[in-house]
Structure formats: structure tokens, C-alpha cells
Image 1: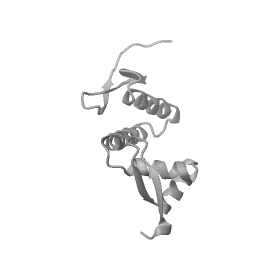
Image 2: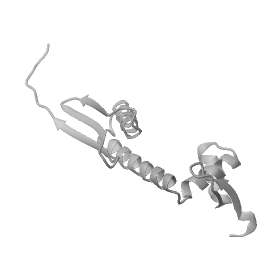
Image 3: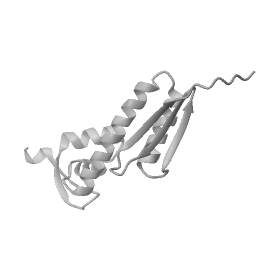
Image 4: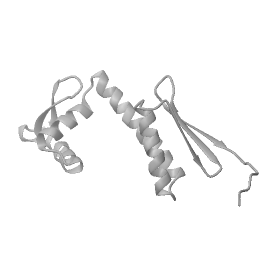
Length: 132
């Protein structure tokens, strides 16, 4: 990297100053509507090797995987997809211990396990009740 391609940002987890590439900073600034300084700090935090940054990267990866599952299952129902994505985020950030959503004859239970992995339990219920 040449001198003009390097910008310094600060990791928000450990406070370490890190050299980051200008193109990454410009991309983050554009994608997340951040100032150049905020974008440099964002990139520094995303690429830092401290334990908190690694844990956050793992959490983000788990959220993306759960989100991809939800998009696949609820691709034809944007309202249900939004509710499920909110449930996944809420349990992964420990706002709730468990959230259960009933959709048709399916019951989806969202929670986290001891390793902080996001769990989704699906149950099919076929009741013979009719309401008129």
C-alpha cells in the first residue's frame, strides 16, 4: 500500500489504531452513510484482531446465516419475513430468551444455545379444528 492509500481508524472495541485502505473506507462511507472518519473507524473495528472484534464478526456471521434461512423460508411473505428477522435479532442480542411465531400450521421457536448459536425449532401442527 502506498502512503496515499492508507487511512488510520480506531477499533471501537480495543481502541487500537489500525491502518486501513482508502478504498475500503470510501466504500463503507458510501454504503453506511458515514463520514470518512466514522468509516475508517468502522473498517478498523471490522478488521481488528482483538477478541471483542472477533466475537462481533462471529455474531454478524451467525445473523447473516439465520437471515438467509429466513429469506429462503419466507421469500413469498415479506411481512412474515420482517417479523422473523426481528425475532432472530432480538434473541441473538439477548433481549428475549425465546420468541415463538405461529404461521399457518407451523410453529417457529427462536432462541440461543449455550454457545450463543441461534437456534430455530420448527414444529408442524395439524389440528382438525374448523372455525366458521
